[in-house]
Image (cartoon, rainbow, N blue to C red; front, side, top):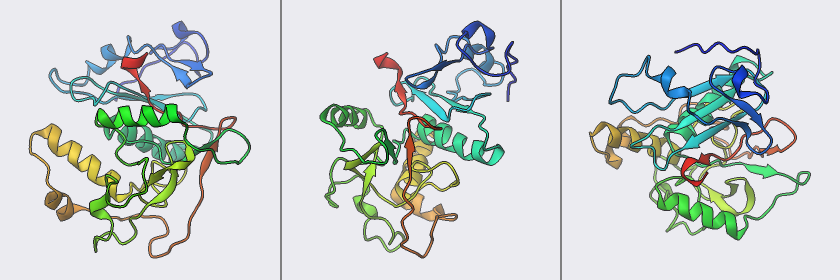
Length: 259
């Protein structure tokens, strides 16, 4: 951990007043050029190690992740605002932004309600964006098809270890036209849950083993996997979740090579 003491207690619109140059942003909640962060990272991360820094700010915005492609060669960055909800909310927020987006390259699984509580269908432009992200190796925890034979988690559907894995509509900020694998996950709700669904867990383990050079296999994943903490374990009750643009919000990860 590195402390970065700013001139202001909370971030605002003046980058010179915060140690890391973080400012509020109407589009993504926060904004950062990332040019000051590597100096802080280098004090604790050995040369040759790829860092995935998690920056905690004093502000009420939920969070944002900056991704550089698959992040294998360069680091990804995640920002989490210390909210009114306190330390428990912050804990789940860091897991969502830093572990889920920043390291795991996972997509959001919730709906983003922009017009009241009405769900929206994913537009063609967003479909194309998701296809591009998946071609880069990101966002395999959501799908543009509900075909159980072609979704990325098809091997988990019907598996005796994962009877709760299926196909549920809603994800990647839209209520219709995009699907996820389970009712709940940290990528769907970071308000209370510290649980990654099965496909997210597998993607995280796969990434760890591949980056370490050990190599991944499904058998290795099964040996140590656990669904401890799964919400509504043993039930089929659905807990709907979404976020409104005028409240605390998460924002989709920003791809740095598209800026």
